[in-house]
Length: 251
Image (cartoon, rainbow, N blue to C red; front, side):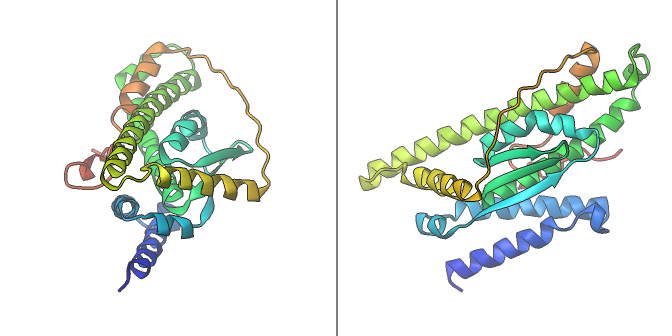
């Protein structure tokens, strides 16, 4: 089997696994097992890309919908997620998050959004059941809003840390390639950026920047949210050392 055929089969399997969600009848355990495998396959696929494969890789667009209270937190951390994955993104209305880029990057972004959103739902339920939440004096929505902002702030900061590490790794690899071959090691990165820019222009989408501000009314709830955001397993969604941390387990 040649490399292109193998990669095509990997991508087909990723799409099939990504479709296994609770909404489509899978149990939560089955959906999370599928998400874990998606992360593993995406890692393998990303490491196997070459300049030739990148030239042939198409840009794709995905829409992830969060039509529930999680959308505020997801919107807050969305730019950091795009920076990490190298994708373009925008929102349509209040609930639709559009991700655009090369297919492996878009699939990784979509995977991470689902993992983060699932962790937020679990952590928020845990917070609601806590004594600290019961002792709160503000209205429930004010406390939960502050919790979600804290969660999103911490996850966004961690995503930016990962993005910085990724850029440093790419720069080191580029320098190594230049030293070994005498060619510009940044060629692949520049080609990728050009492919995405060309694909985005072809969409004819015109974006505008919207600045939003928010107020944290409950510092305690915000702190609990930050702690929760620090527990989401983002580093590497594969391997024995991280598989158990992809999402907190129900007790």
